[in-house]
Image (cartoon, rainbow, N blue to C red; front, side):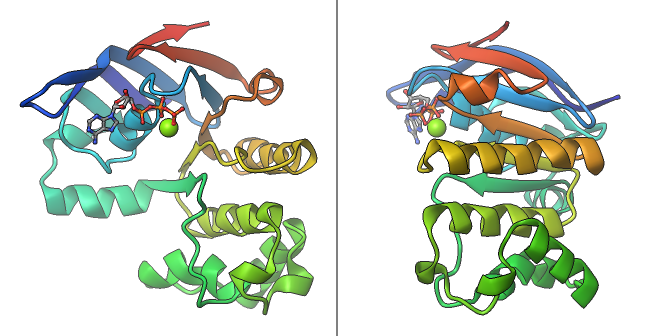
Length: 221
Ligand SMILES: Nc1ncnc2c1ncn2[C@@H]1O[C@H](COP(=O)(O)OP(=O)(O)OP(=O)(O)O)[C@@H](O)[C@H]1O
Ligand SMILES: [Mg+2]
């Protein structure tokens, strides 16, 4: 089953001084698949991820998530669908410095108004090696630990799709591998679907499938 179906997506930034960032991009992703997107800086990777995840609604073409074409939704419908279906992990984490590790992890659950039970939280904290840091604030953590908090949060937000935009970009190779392994295990053990952007070919090679973007054109490899 294709959980993501992108068909003929074209994205033009800045209509006055147009720049075509994506040209007729089509892509299917299966449920439980770990897909990596590679490509040079400025090639359109983040642009594509933002469209798939419903952050960017200004494009031509179709973006079907779980059978629903996000492009046909109203702003309000899109906002609620997106929250239900997709979580993002950014290179810069987007964590809240004024909250502790466990508060950050539970944040999206809180926004969505469901309860994370103690058992589930402890499970995630220990799986991610964050048990001892649960009461720490974000600036007391290493980069690798911060990135694990961001992944733990996306996991507890219970979406089927995780979009990760260079989540290992700031990490040393050991921590990058650890973060990769956690995301990979989510596809295997929980049937999450992951799209992972990286410049690291060593990591890319370990995914189920690699696609490449060059100058806004997507190539299956
Ligand atoms: N808001 C914007 N307005 C105009 N052009 C933009 C805008 N955002 C991105 N672009 C252009 O679109 C192209 C694709 O950008 P994008 O951020 O998708 O690249 P990327 O592949 O993610 O690069 P990187 O590896 O550096 O993150 C770039 O040439 C960029 O300059
Ligand atoms: Mg980018």
